[in-house]
Structures are given as structure tokens and as C-alpha cells.
Length: 296
Image (tube, rainbow, N blue to C red; front, top):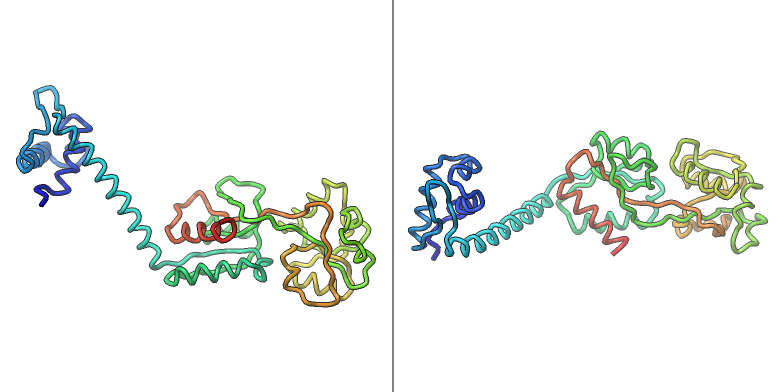
């Protein structure tokens, strides 16, 4: 049976590291006499002398050095266990505000979110389907905890970690001349009326900037905000469109055909958090879950 309490051990560690009862008392926010009394009681209960004391110095004895190693190891283990318990306690309740790009609604992302909620049923998820630009604005004002977005051009005050590469393909109306090709050359897109996202959206910026690298300027026929609406217009013959490859498996219309682009056109999708605010245990759990789901 132990003959001392935790408070005595913590006091002993402070005195040993400070080599001073006075300094230790300041760190512990108590009096020197209280510190001295705790050490004397600890020595009495252990039956050994822990310090050699003089008017000028306080040094550990051989027994004190042995106890210090064990005491610091024990304190480290206690701190680790405390942090783990606090983290687990934080996962029993709470709310996470999560934004994601609207184009992810019909993707594997929603299955990931469903799996997370099944694993952490006591956490509440508040979901927002908004574009990357607005997500970054809301992260900066703490209206969001996390956002699944395309890679931001500016990462100041934002931490971004990629989840997957979102490659783009061409959507064509049935019977379109390009549908006879297995792979579409990117320069062929410049000759066609194209239905794209509006100016100012992240997706449009990504597409335009990557096409410029190949000296291609789109002949924009229509600017449409959502992928489903773009595909409806493709189906009705208004033009062709550039869309994320993942939408292909969700479209069953016989009047829309998809072809890969010869060049690797696309964007990085990942998790963004603000560096201005401390990350909660619940947010960390969701972030780590998404990485296991996509990258594990």
C-alpha cells in the first residue's frame, strides 16, 4: 500500500527540478513552509532522505534520483491518460459545423459522413452545401469547424490537407461527333459551345487556369451553377460540359455520354480548417476519420 499521495510526488518533482524550495513554492503557488512539510512527510513515509539540504543548495540524494525517474514517468503516464480521457469525453456530445462542395452530394463523400455518424452517434453534424469560397469565409469567422473543399489558392490562416484528386471528364449529348473518340483532345474543346460554372466560382477558376496552360480558351455558351443543371442542358443539346468524373456513375440517361480528357484536368479535394481557432476533439475525430476513409 502506498504511503504518499499524488500531491506529495508532484511537489517532490518541482523541488528536484528547481533545486530550490522557494522556486518550487512559487511554481506551485503555495508557501515554502508547505513545500518543506510535504517533502518531510514524504521522506518519513518512505523511510529515506530524498534531498541533501544546505543553506545554499538542495541536491537529490541517490534515493531521490531513483524516485525522480519513477515519479516523472508516472506523471507522464497520468498526463497522457488524462488527455485521452478528456478527448474521449469530448466525443460523447457536441456539434460539428461541416461544409462541403455541392458537387459532392452525389458522391462517396456522403457515404463517408454516414459512416462517421454511425461510429459517433452522440455527435451532431450540421451540414452546409456551399462552394469553396464561401466555406473559407465562414471558417475565418468560426461559423464552420471544417470544410471539404478544393485546394485554396491562399493558405494563410487555413490548414488544408488533400483527400483525393478529382479528375474531370467531358459530358456530351448523344450523337455528338466527339463521342466517336475514346479520349478527347483538350484542344477540341475550344471549338465547341461549352456549359460551365459561372465566373467567380472556384471550379471555373480551376478549369480556366488549367486550360490556359494548354493554350485553350473555352467558347462559353452558358454559365450554370450546379452540375445536375449542366447535365440537363447537355442532354437537351445546348452544348458540351466539363464535369467531375465521379458524377458519371450517378447518371443513367442514355442521351448523355462521357469521355475522358487526354490531359489530366482536375482539382485537389481536401479538408480545410482555420488556424485561428483551437481544434476540438470532435473536429479532430471527423478530420482523422475522413483521412482513414479516403487514404487509409
